Image (cartoon, rainbow, N blue to C red):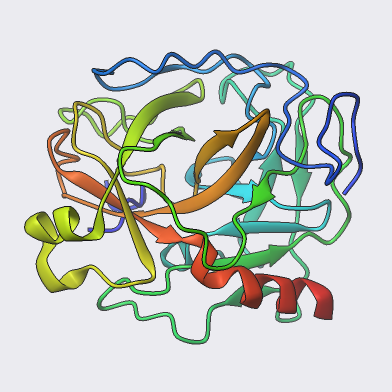
Length: 268
């Protein structure tokens, strides 16, 4: 089940040389063995997190800023340039005082969905959005680094996923403040014990230990910290319909798409 809510390089001080993946506002991450559900993030500490919203301000998916012009999200979010916007720098969806940036995506073919997107099997679940004007980068809006092509990741690697998705399986309400949760990666073979042949090489599994992504988190980031740099390795894609905290959720494997992302971004 896709985690949709509808159904329910500038370098900054201390940034990496690549100018990505180093928040000015440090996240507070506890790598507990048992994180039960999520917790409020530190405001501004995930500066690449974006909210995809309708033009009337309803959040429906997440995304990640990868440079001042481009956002990566899930294909199944079905971003529509005519009716949707990209909101950067948001933390509390109900606050009227945050200096958010609301960006449109240019109409001409600049929501670029992967050519092999398979909506039936939710395979190759990735779309790139080109902003019609560049993001103003700063402490609360900054890009994440992208996983290199063919990055080999160890199972049990501790990762963090963030979003405004559902926080309670008994309610369709979305989170007001940005949530974060630490999850371990799960090996492909282990994941196939849950999901069988639905799992492809374009997918990555994480969780199953007391927390889960859920509807409304779709398109958002799964990141891990290497040194002081955070790298995007997954895009929230799908999982159990009731966001079962004992079942791993499935993420688009960013390393499989790095060459495609670079190609599209280079084309402008």
